[in-house]
Length: 201
Length: 188
Image 1 (spheres, each protein chain N blue to C red):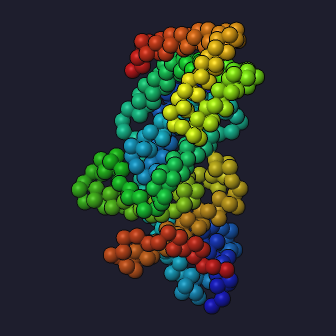
Image 2 (cartoon, each protein chain N blue to C red; image 1 turned 180 degrees about the horizontal axis):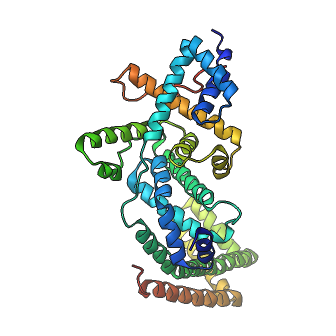
Image 3 (cartoon, chains in turn cyan, brown; image 1 turned 180 degrees about the vertical axis):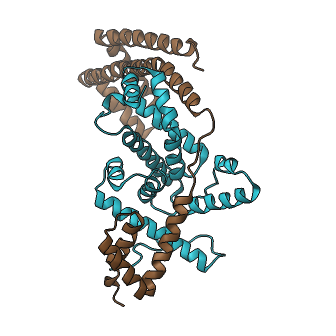
C-alpha cells in the first residue's frame, strides 16, 4: 500500500495501516522531538504522544496537504508545549544540560570516530539548547529534514519571510557561539542571544 | 564602516548557504567579501555553523518504537471506557454533593425564615445574643433552643424529606458506580 492508501485505511480505523505510517515516520518525528527537547526518554514519549494525537485527529487531516507536514506540525507544537511547561518549572530552559543521545553513540563504529561524533552531538545539542524554541524548530526542520522555507512555514503556521528571518537569526546565533568558543576554548557556554543580529543595520 | 551597509550581505550569506541566492547577488557578495574583513569573518563563521549542522546525524529511536506505539494505542483504547465511567462517577458525585447540600441549605434557609416568624424562637435568638454578650454559659443554651427550633421546622417540611431521599438515591448510585470502577477489570 502507498501512503495515501495507508492514510485512507487508517482513517477508516485500520490500526495496522497507521502503524505502518508510524514505522515510516518514526525516525523523523523522533529526531524532531529529540532535537527540540534534548532528552532521549522525553523525546520517545513526545514522539509517541504525537503519533497518538495524529491518530485521534486523522478525521481532521486535510488530504490535500502533505502528510509529513501535518505530522511535523503536531509533533513540533507538542514539543514546544512541553518546553513551555518545562520552562514554567525551571524558569530557564537555556541552562538545561543536554545528554548525548545513546543511539548516536551506538551507531559509531570505531572508538575514535565515536568520540568525535559524541563530541559533535554534544556540541550541536548545546548550541540548539541556547536557541529560542521557535528558532530551534526552524533549524531542525531545515537541517535534519531538508524542508524548504515554504514547507517550514506551512508546518509552523508562519509566513515564509518570518521563517527566513528565524533561520538566519538562529544560524547567526550558532555561528556567533562557535566563534566565541573558538576565541575562548575554556568557555563552555555563552550568554543567550549573544548575536541577536550578527551585523546590525 | 557603516553597519547598515552590511545588512543585505548578512541575508545574502544566509540565502547563499540555503542555495537561494541569485547569481548576480552571489557575485556581488563575493566582491564584498573580498573587501570586507568583518563580513569575511562572519561568512566563515556562518559556513562553519552550516557545516556543523549539516554533519549532525539523525537521532534514531530505540528499536521497537512502532511496537511500543501499538501497545500504547491499545492501552489508550482500553482505558477509554474507564474514562467514561470516570466521567459518569464524577457527574454522580457532583449531583450527589449538590443533592446533599441543597436540601440542607434550603431547609436551613426555610427554617430560618420560619424561625424569624416565631416570637419564641426570635426571643431565643435575642436571648442567645444577649447571653453571648453577657454570659458565656448562656450561649450554649440559646444555641440549643435555636437548633431545636430549626430541627422541628425542617422536619415539618416535605421538600426537605423529598430532597434527602433523592440525595440518598444519588449517593447509592454513585457508590455503585465507584464500586464498578474499582472492581472492574484492571487495564494492563
